[in-house]
Length: 52
Image (tube, rainbow, N blue to C red; front, top):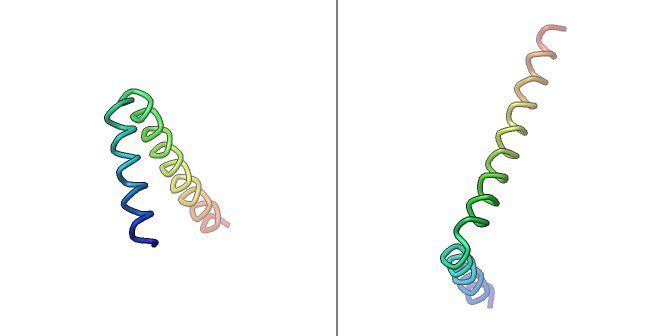
Protein backbone atom coordinates (compact mmCIF):
# COMPACT_ATOMS: atom_id res chain seq x y z
CA UNK A 1 0.00 0.00 0.00
CA UNK A 2 2.82 2.42 0.85
CA UNK A 3 4.52 1.70 -2.46
CA UNK A 4 1.32 2.39 -4.41
CA UNK A 5 0.73 5.62 -2.51
CA UNK A 6 4.31 6.69 -3.20
CA UNK A 7 3.89 6.09 -6.95
CA UNK A 8 0.62 8.02 -6.96
CA UNK A 9 2.21 10.97 -5.17
CA UNK A 10 5.16 10.92 -7.57
CA UNK A 11 2.79 10.87 -10.56
CA UNK A 12 0.81 13.80 -9.13
CA UNK A 13 4.02 15.77 -8.52
CA UNK A 14 5.24 15.19 -12.08
CA UNK A 15 1.79 16.09 -13.43
CA UNK A 16 1.71 19.30 -11.38
CA UNK A 17 5.19 20.31 -12.55
CA UNK A 18 4.22 19.56 -16.14
CA UNK A 19 1.01 21.56 -16.06
CA UNK A 20 2.20 24.44 -13.82
CA UNK A 21 5.95 24.88 -14.33
CA UNK A 22 6.07 28.50 -13.12
CA UNK A 23 4.46 27.96 -9.71
CA UNK A 24 6.33 24.66 -9.29
CA UNK A 25 9.63 26.45 -9.86
CA UNK A 26 8.65 29.11 -7.32
CA UNK A 27 7.89 26.43 -4.73
CA UNK A 28 11.20 24.66 -5.41
CA UNK A 29 13.10 27.96 -5.19
CA UNK A 30 11.40 28.80 -1.89
CA UNK A 31 12.24 25.40 -0.43
CA UNK A 32 15.86 25.75 -1.56
CA UNK A 33 16.16 29.22 -0.05
CA UNK A 34 14.66 27.99 3.21
CA UNK A 35 17.10 25.09 3.44
CA UNK A 36 19.99 27.43 2.60
CA UNK A 37 18.94 29.83 5.34
CA UNK A 38 18.75 27.01 7.88
CA UNK A 39 22.32 25.93 7.12
CA UNK A 40 23.50 29.54 7.18
CA UNK A 41 21.95 30.03 10.61
CA UNK A 42 23.56 26.82 11.88
CA UNK A 43 26.93 28.09 10.63
CA UNK A 44 26.39 31.43 12.35
CA UNK A 45 25.52 29.62 15.57
CA UNK A 46 28.77 27.64 15.56
CA UNK A 47 30.84 30.74 14.67
CA UNK A 48 29.29 32.65 17.57
CA UNK A 49 29.76 29.66 19.83
CA UNK A 50 33.47 29.43 18.99
CA UNK A 51 33.97 33.18 19.49
CA UNK A 52 32.74 32.77 23.04
